[in-house]
Amino acid sequence: MLLRIAGRCSVAGMTSSEHLRAAVRDIADFPKEGILFKDITPVLANGALFRDCITLLCETAAGQKIDKVVGIDARGFIFAAAVADRLGVGFVPVRKAGKLPWKTRGLAYSLEYGENVIELHEDAVLPGENVLLVDDLLATGGTAAAAAELITSLGANLIGAAFFIELCELHGRAKMPNCPIHSILSYGAEWRLLHRWIFFTAKALRPRRFEMFLLQSARKTSRVDAETQVEIITKFEG
Ligand code: AMP
Image (tube, rainbow, N blue to C red; front, side, top):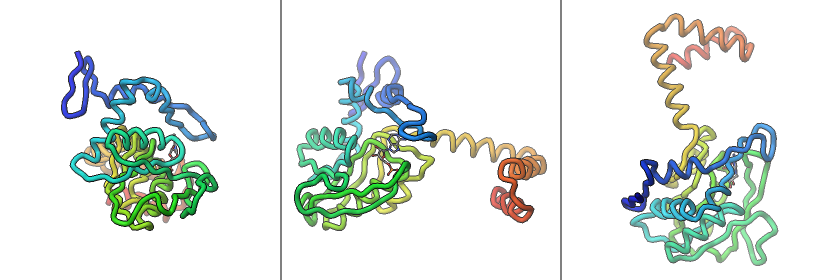
């Protein structure tokens, strides 16, 4: 049975975000060694999942007057265009350098893998317009922060930024402190909470042994000098 409550749906006990999470495919070492690529194509290929994903992205702007949805080249276009259509407003592409045909404003930024320059048409968003920024994934936040800067430099109001996926460990949202950030699926946050819980429990139960463990780990893993070891312990204890 399908239940729909305020835009969220649940099938056989699983919420739509759980279905979406189950469909995202992890590809190790793509496009470079060390990168765990989040492949969203299984979500796009499933009509019900894609619709749920767009519904959840639209909900992030609930109650706000949005004039334009800006999407980031290239996977961001897929989500942003669908969100714009659902909200009944215009779609604006932020593109890689050299792809837009008219007068552009550009900005350079660094990626989780590599460097890039993005551009926006100068008349794509107007002063005073309310803009929602949409992309497939928030990693280091360089791309979104650059897009946000381009939008606000043209005088538009950035109402929020919505991402299908957020890789929390890369702290991308810290690059956009003045913009409300929403993500449908976040990865890494639960591990951070678990680590923190293990850390504080171990510290509370066996403080002296825990201190020695930290010292030994620091010695083994980073071969740091004595002064830095003391610093590490002080930092962890603080
Ligand atoms: P960043 O500027 O680091 O936040 O990178 C965000 C952009 O890079 C998004 O538009 C994604 O399409 C892409 N990206 C970065 N890291 C990944 C990843 N691990 N899996 C899939 N796409 C990624």
